[in-house]
Length: 161
Image 1 (tube, one colour):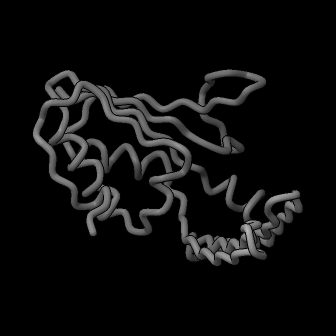
Image 2: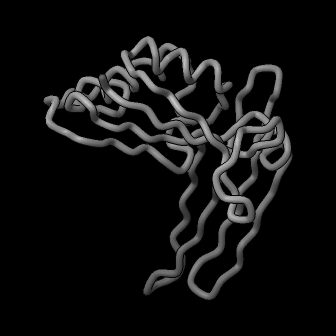
């Protein structure tokens, strides 16, 4: 089964987008570079690549030792997450119960994520061949703005030249 680390497509696309923490699931910087290289190869010259990654600040503030419980009419779930700042590894355990015609169905999901610094991401993008790399933070309250040490998520936009 292939994923973003090993897909191959012809260079026929004008843009590629990767959002909502997807790249935080890539746990090694060399594999993140592979993703960026694959995206670069499938873009036409002048093609745009936009992605976002959740920051170390977010993991420390919102993921470390965090539990969420949702109790609804047709489903119930828990999310227990832990973040180890020393190894920059987050483990997120989800248990979901969905109501079926006859009883409930249980699903257990374990996800792993890690943050990358803006310098690491920019370096990997450059190594893949991208130019004109822009980095912004954004919040609903402030809109796009310069990244700060307490930014939860950074957005990257770049071009294939």
